[in-house]
Length: 262
Figure 1 (cartoon, rainbow, N blue to C red):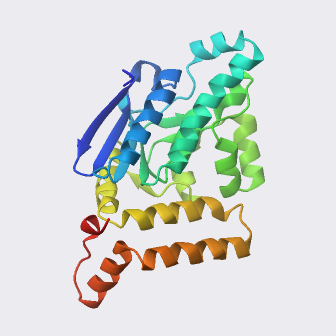
Figure 2 (figure 1 turned 180 degrees about the horizontal axis):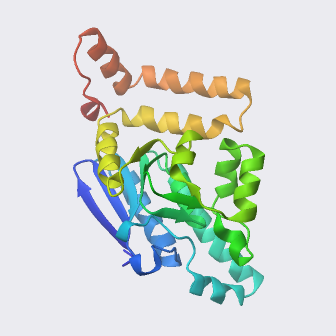
């Protein structure tokens, strides 16, 4: 495991901490590869049913490490592309992870740190935090999926402002726009995210995974194809142990036990 990554486990919830506070948890190759490995392990472990991602020292993530970016700027084009692809492999792994990922954001998320937060399924943020698509401030363009994630959720004019200026956008505004699920008092986002993750961990893991896949496909799939995907998903769910347990619990007026049904 990378020294930049710390983990702790509480029941079915795994918390992953980006631990490089001296650089406000900037990203490096070791984090890309290390976090991707954690995701793969968590996906294969049936005892882990939800993941929380946060940053150490009161800041979520400042994006790419500038010393590393300087070194890569002097490399050939193929080497520069390899670095980006390692970031993108991590982002893809997050979206393919079949279990919930919740970002707990303190301080701020900048550059690729914005992509890291948006690649999570849900975002819990301190009310005084911000996001900044800051690439333009050092003459760069976005990566990590930030324009893909934001382009699906925001008006073009607002996304243009964010990409062209790199200005800080308060998380309070991001919640108003629907990109942040919950706001907390400063210092409280991790605890709130862990409580939410524990609740989701009690849910039907297969149904959550199918729901995540449907959500990701919805913006790019035709209406008819999406209906077909929904039909396939619910047919599988109805015939599976989670569906049978959920329906039985409802009819018997009791709380469902999805853990034993998974």
